[in-house]
Length: 326
Image 1 (cartoon, rainbow, N blue to C red):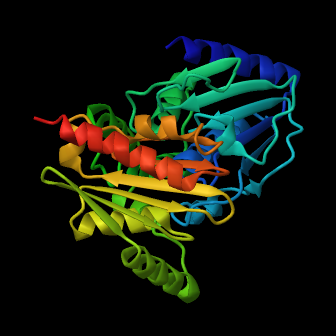
Image 2 (image 1 turned 45 degrees about the vertical axis):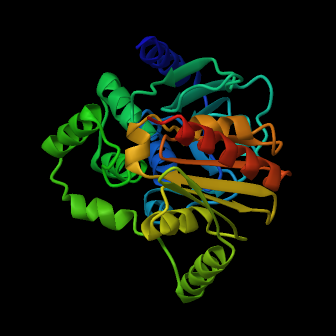
């Protein structure tokens, strides 16, 4: 991969010039984004390079246990020489973090690039990978670095982004096998790292959100398929997962609290037939004055307005797909 060569050359230059680094993760940073940043931070530290990790807005409950491995700042002011962006396909996902002009930008990601991708001096993007963490592992092999704490963060990213290996491919299992051959790590330890951090009040809020989502649920039937649509003030993705468990084939849940957020999920049998929610969500970005994207079976969007219009668009796109199935 050409990006690997450019990155290695640049890192050698960075060491000679004593560059400082800011490692950035998207809003509501998940274990893939945060785990990748933590692992790469440890590599930079091993080179003697100063670095910080920053996240936009918040950290996912699934990623909070990774904070034991590193200090992480929310919405940092970027003053470093170099910015590395992990698992992020658009600048909107970094809002409200501002990227100053004149900085060297590096992107490491596994999502398909959008029409207006982040402008970067070095890009390492591989959409054949099921997680950004796998790409970081490949980079470490090329750069000759690994330590146990880094690979624990990498494994956490792989587990969550593949939905406990549900969406894993041959490359995923090859990566995990390589890591486990080098380190005596029990996968149960990694699963414990990505257990959501909650308290009693949060748990009650989740239950209330799910009940309200069910109360407001609208059901559309296309052929033999069921689309479940609802609106809540929080926990959109959890509501989507619940709808699938209840029997829906596709779930769409939106929120208008502090801007517009939309989450969507689809069952595996539709993914195998070609449904790709991430590509549909990308089209939603302009409608809500924000951005959207994700995986084939799980995708989301964040913006400022027009939730109802965006949901109608999503439903229409999915209905069209379902009607065209043989």
